[in-house]
Length: 213
Image (tube, one colour):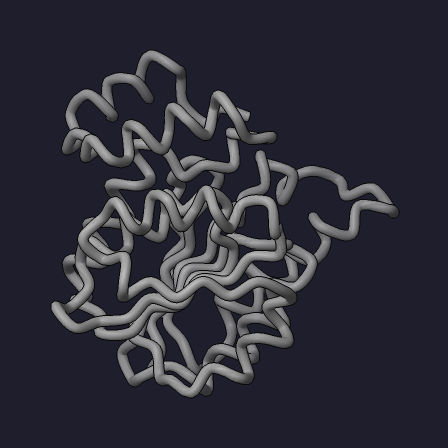
């Protein structure tokens, strides 16, 4: 679902910072070789992630849902010099693809890949996070949030992707549409949870910024 016209989306990209060349290559190869390339953050959202990270200057980042590594590299752009990014994904077939591009970047040694179920991996991470990006299976967003909040530094930022779900959050929800039901509940949770303050941005498919109090 396009919330604004394609022409306006093109104008927005043209008047935002250019993609770094490495991300242009990653973008192109993702569309050539990987299923569901629309899952890629892409130029505009990638620049938003980069800008937010540069404003936050995180020392520690957690990403839930790596895909081909595009968003991880965007988040690294604002990371402190000796910072660390942990990224979790369940797709074993993408690990080498991700690592190829991570190692082409200046942050290769600072990016730690984790393969498996995020709900199992997150409790094993001995870290407090300044920035978290949630972009994985929507059915577990609420579980991820409750796991992550106690692991955040005060003032840390949680970014949640796809929270508008192609506009389905406004429609009559079908009985068997568990994903939309959970996203509606998740959006309400972020609005009402006293541990965070939240603003939902209409960027692509919806990006929520939640600041831990």
